[in-house]
Image 1 (spheres, rainbow, N blue to C red):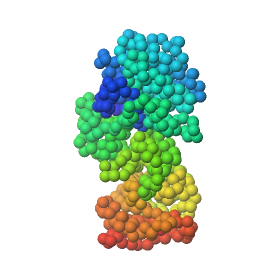
Image 2: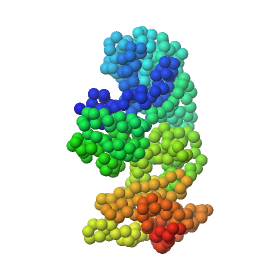
Image 3: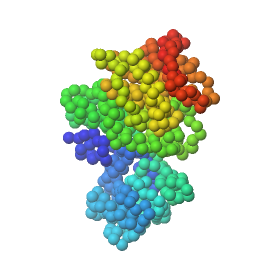
Image 4: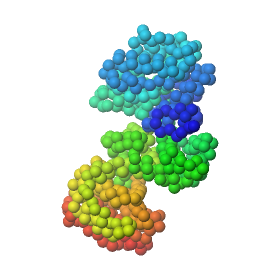
Length: 512
């Protein structure tokens, strides 16, 4: 029996997985060319699984002795390179004993004090050229990291007889972003300690055919079918992000639809998506940590607000691309990497205001439990007048603080059994919200009135018209938050008015 895996490297005997070289077709040529290279990608995208499997395939071919090792055990000794190297070498010999047959294992490294020395000794005595994949390299920092990189560079000219023929550094970041406390910066900022690399690339996501192939393994094993529509929805929601692809399937087949005679449909996938987002498992939770970094914030905050990016460095934009938080849309511009991340990011950021909310009685519900949109509007106005000012200060992203507070309020509303979906894009200067609760669907557009900018009412009415038409609605809310420096206090400026879009759709305009 095999399973969808969401924790640690995949094992072929118990997990569904894809061939390693299928996602890294360039590696075979780099190894033949005796290349040293970098592979970087976010956690849980399959780096370790792919390289571990590739190492086994290369060794089984009879051409190379290939081994996947890790530098993680040296992370505790960032200021003590000698101790770190001894710990790393001990871990590498353990890995060799586990993965390699006796005749291919390295000789004793008891007399070796440094990693470069040990690799030289092994290469000189090996009956085959060595290929070494060093995982978690960016767990090392400072003196230890620099020492290891310089030893690898020093041994590089002696390959393949006196050093590994090919070597890859594998981690979350490209070499320029390795953590080094030097020169007033915590980033390496250059590839100079490892300027021997021939290429640096990231592990791509699954394409639609690969998602189909992965899910097809489950169908072959159990007979349970994923409908074509379900697979297409998975790909659209995840854009092929490996952890998300596996997590959705795992939630569906192990929790939601355990009867293998029942086919998996888009409704099952949508339910699994909501569960994953609400639960915020390790992978999704790690996104929250990234949002605290200043260079991440400098790009994500205007994206959420629908604003154009201010001046940012190419390195910072590439960093977010490498992390898998954003991607370049074929039509142009940066977008959040996939619809699930697009939901997770604002939810995470709204958590502070949400935790700060006072107790709110659900006065927006009718006696039968259905949503009363008019009562909801009154409840929001009362809430915003009383609590808006202090809650704005609890939001971590200042530019979109009103958006986050409003989303926090609406999350209290949907806790009873609704959903809240968001749309935003660079240059749109807005965020759109779709609240669904039972039979009620409410379209909401959020705009901001800023200093030295025209009143956004006219543009907002045109924009919400298109949004409501996509939702097949005839009415909605346009919320305009006043963030000008001379704006009156919320309690004084809060008001509503009825208005119409150019095509005559009824809109309630809320000024906050």
